[in-house]
Length: 362
Ligand SMILES: NC(=O)c1ccc[n+]([C@@H]2O[C@H](COP(=O)([O-])OP(=O)(O)OC[C@H]3O[C@@H](n4cnc5c(N)ncnc54)[C@H](O)[C@@H]3O)[C@@H](O)[C@H]2O)c1
Image (cartoon, rainbow, N blue to C red):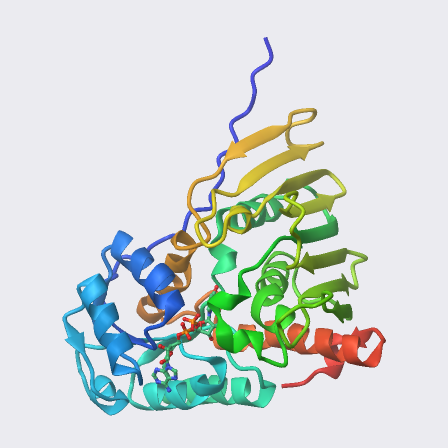
């Protein structure tokens, strides 16, 4: 009888030895309440306090999550010696000023994505953190979503051989009204959504040489900017990646899938979060390797949701970097690469041409 090999996938977020750092939340809006804080509570992290320019939002958040201290100002928060890490979740255009003050006050920072909409501002955050000798990471938590983390593990182990084709295809109906400020924003889909896919592709395959994008809207849409985009990444190795996203699908036949093909095998699966946002379902994954386990299709039951479970990943990685004096996986400097891809996509779409990534400098 043929024995089916066990696929021992390593995809769950790893917590470092020390996790008792005091965390202060800056910006107590939607994502903090339904993602950051539930993930931290599930892993017993210590949230020392929270602050928001909207004092009511800070008080509501403190009450809902049992946070002991509400700060009256950013200065008060930064002066608190119990705070080691500032977890910033404010609109991107307010992030630089807060991050610069936080690292100057000796705090490590976890920033939200996008690190900034402006490359020079993002580079300034990197420089400020380096100058202050503090660790700074970005909340690109899709890298820790089960499907992407499992794919990373398989690809690193040579399961599919040399990657040749990558596709992330999403056709869904996104409730943009949950973010009224995004509805009126001049840049939408790539800057605020596909940025996760571009960051995940960089994590799996590195930086492409060329970026080609087309952006469009949907008839009668309320949002000001693009809600449908197609981006093609060409790599020097010959790898081609496609990110195709439509946020206006009311067909009842929506999907959110990934497929990574290599010379020796394939990995494919679904992004569970987008099947019923923001509740979601677990990611799925099937894979096959012609060399490591010929003719066997593995159908893996993955655990954990992108929201909130993956949100422990960036914070855990930041804590690991603090205690090992290493680099968080989504270090701000690495994130400049993701932002360059985002900007290359907008340039390509605006100028109706392919853009060499090296054209876009921070
Ligand atoms: N990583 C992800 O998957 C993910 C998902 C959703 C949102 N986000 C990002 O998180 C950030 C916040 O998004 P949200 O949906 O929670 O928005 P939100 O509008 O619900 O909350 C933002 C909060 O920040 C506060 N704020 C604004 N400026 C501030 C300042 N200078 N100091 C203190 N507080 C300030 C606001 O009062 C508000 O309470 C955005 O940058 C967004 O892109 C990331």
